[in-house]
Image (cartoon, rainbow, N blue to C red; front, side, top):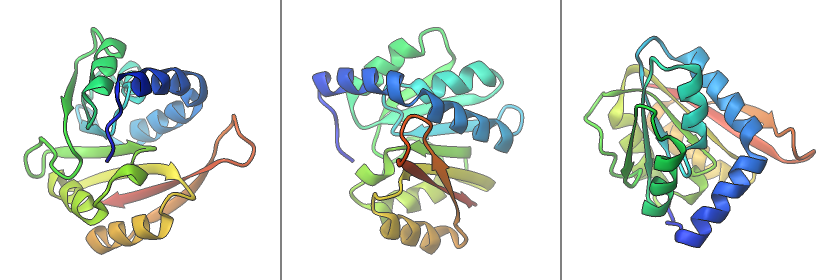
Length: 181
């Protein structure tokens, strides 16, 4: 996973606000439908925290966590989520700061293509998911699709895939990979 510098982080925050709000709403709806009361949800590669802000508004009962490799992104997420009961940490997806079987739902929006060691990251994801837990991975369809599906299938078995069309771009699509522990 790459880390963003301060200026890159500020620029991404602006673009995410302008371009990704519809996608974040869609993902928040998916999280809402796939989690039970008081579930633990972790956002892998949370960036500026926009997705967690949408989820926190919809589901104040959830225990929300966000990780990002960039301390600058975590600082921006902290400002975005000020006053929300969300735990944020600078961490690598291949070394998650969560105990075994402690996460009910993990989500990644547009970050998996940045993970340098997909098998290690997916193995770590499997480690933290509770039995019956699930993950939703949203990423560009053109981004390492075969490698992502293979890594997920090797660790989780069945991978459910859905194409999500982005409302702000007529040809951009996101592949949503869903797995269950």
